[in-house]
Amino acid sequence: MSDYHINIFYSEEDGGYIADIPDLDSCSAFGRTPEEALAEVERAKAAWIEAAKREGKPIPEPRYRPVIYQAAR
Image (cartoon, rainbow, N blue to C red; front, side, top):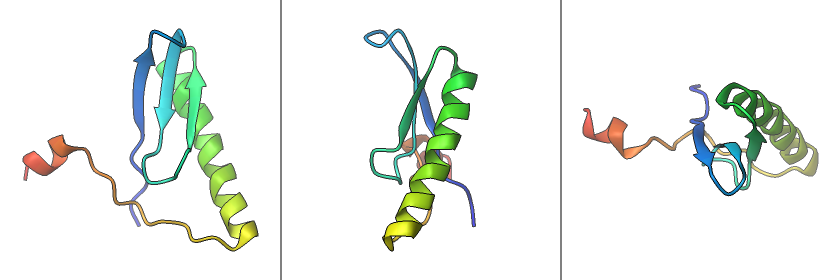
C-alpha cells in the first residue's frame, strides 16, 4: 500500500502552513513551518484512521495524485 498524498501550502490568512490529506475527508492541520504542519497532519491522520476504525467506517485507499504526476507519465 502506498501512503496518502499530503498537500502543504502557505496561508496568508492564517499566517502559517496548512497540510491536508485529500483522500481523508477534513483531515488537515496547521503549523508555523512546513515541517510543523507535516508533523501535525501525520498526527491528525493517525487520529482520523483510529476514529474511523472505532466507528466501523471505511478507510479509503490512497488514490489522490496531483495532476502534475498524471501529466508526467
